[in-house]
Length: 365
Image (cartoon, rainbow, N blue to C red; front, side):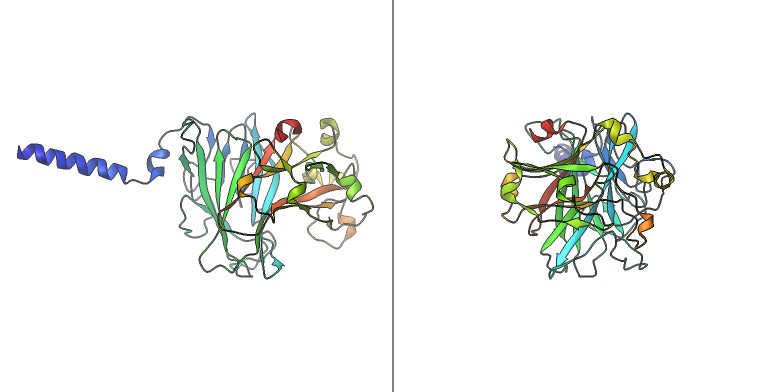
């Protein structure tokens, strides 16, 4: 009788210990989805899903898995798509908190560590921020977020970064779902002791690369060539924002703003055959497909302050140089550069960013 009681106690201890394990302990053990994720914390800082969206951090180049420390701009999410075994780099996303009316840019705000442009960013599997690590630092945690569809998987991890000079100190939870493979969710929080943020904007910064010129709103399509038709300088140009009432709303009630190129693929893939453009091959569009980019906000989460904002350029960015000879015109005319949804900050606000090969009609559905 005593041995039976002891055995029952051992069983109780065993199963209690299993139930008390963190969810991600057994969530990471198996997966039926072709995730792109680091093998260990020393691997490249890159996460995504095969056939879908990919996100990476400096110094990793998401286009080349091996030997991929390329330097490049800090303080940015690298955004791309995986197709046919190749990851194509398509945009950057910057973090821009606003404190006391002043906007600060994660990609050009100086680091508190070395004074160079760009905040250091690093990943973690949990809310504990740890410290900067120049590689993956986290594999990501796999969960099953939809009890009605238990086969759906979600890969989640946290992105931390240095405190801004303004005192703003945001951090972001990243979610990628297997049933929405061309989309990534960003959930924005603030660290304890952060300055109060009026907004914490995530902005896609490189629309010119894929020559995004058509912005789809609720009742009209904004054409960058018409919006910026009289602008000939080398700087950014900006018009008014678009309020919530002008943002397209899909059948599920979500607010959605999408941009696309006006060009055919053959036009988009072409490149002027002159020495000035040969020297700037990094701006030549290299994927074998066209894309649509979009921001989405769930309707029941959207505040009245929700806005869509774009700015444009008629020349490719050349590092803020004042030497106009370093700039070349964007083939086909002005295009949108920064593209974002923004609203008043609250902890836990969520925005979804998509890069899709689907036609615009499918996105708007």
